[in-house]
Length: 423
Image (cartoon, rainbow, N blue to C red):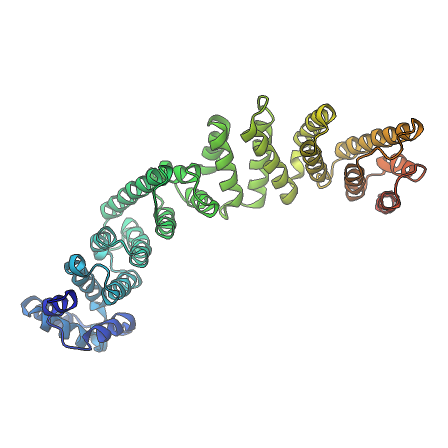
């Protein structure tokens, strides 16, 4: 006897019941059942055989008076799946029934299904089944924690701890280069965020530092925002005290998170830049942290960071003077573009002085017979930034560009910047 035949024997279902049962699970009924009808169905379910129980469920699904039973019937369908999981774990019909039943339990707010849903999650390895179970658990366990009369807070805490353990195991497997189911992990992160258990902080933070694909890190940061306590303060503390690689991971996740406002991200980036600037020589992770922080400050136009960005500008400017590598030039251009959105007189003065220095270097090179030795991208970057700032302090040095033998595109950029100055 094959597996499907065993299942049909176990359920004593005649052909067509699978589809009808699936339809019943999807439909639901709008009217409230009377207590007498509910008790009648309960008595019949207790004394009937499995085959009759299936018929009773089908009758209940079309009985407007029995809508109160729908949650219990969804749970019954889950138990059918659990009873047959071992012999038909990968059967498409069984998997589909299980998904529908799990989703239905959540939609029906049937919190008594919490333990059954956890058993479904534990017994099945199919991603669709697990995600459906997690989505339902996120709704039902939260309802239980909030005093839903059908559930209890202890059930919620138990589920949180189970999910914490599952996610911790997945984190360990991923760090060990083992295969993991990313969609299921994503659903677990969402569930933990929805449940909001304080004990989830360590495993959610571990997601950020485990090296998962970047969307998972941002999702974990969003979930952390939903936990009790001052998550931003906790993330900032991690940024200050943890190893450089973890600082970098936390920063990336926080900036990508949808749980923080642009202003909060700007302040976080300012802190990250201050910390990153304290790097030791060849601190690659902290150097990258600074670069990402500057990009974030520019994107969020966080003008309160102007003094920090200026200090970083002078640091990179000095490093560029020593090495003059393309990498250092790119970093300098990056911080110049950030200064352009700071709306700060100090930023305008620093960039005007930078342009004056570049002008003098170009003029000296021309007189020495080494005409043309200038970094055009750097000159253009400074001129463009001064035009964005629009501070008249830059007038003299912008105007002087027109007297030098720069290429016409540089002179045109200077004229445009001059036109943008505010008087």
